[in-house]
Length: 180
Image (cartoon, rainbow, N blue to C red; front, side, top):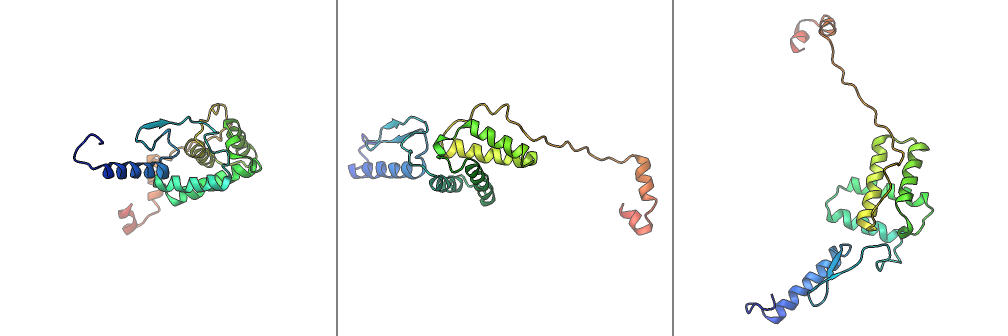
């Protein structure tokens, strides 16, 4: 854009400032940000990427902002917030950046074995924590394969035999038999 004669210097600067503002407000957690001269500057991923002072209030604010940007349902946001809060309380308000996959595994095993949650509830808790680690804390979760998981009940479909259908229809009279 700088070499294009159609754009004045002030327009190039304004565009660069707009990109920096957008990157700072919406793309900050991403892998790279634009520097002030317009070049791409890589920032390493990791727990200490300038966020040592991250506390739970900041985490919940980032969660809200991130889920709003991704157009998640407010109900999903509420349930994720509840599960992340339970996770926080389970580890006694421990510093968020010190938590890792082993903590997630321990928490999921706890709610499965002691709270006796259903498989769907456990999956919801897992997804909330996965969102927290991937999108907010920017950490990868590992070694979750051997986590205790609640079993999903298999439901058998109920199909009546012809004899059972005839038996049930035998109790119906004229106008109702036509509807059946």
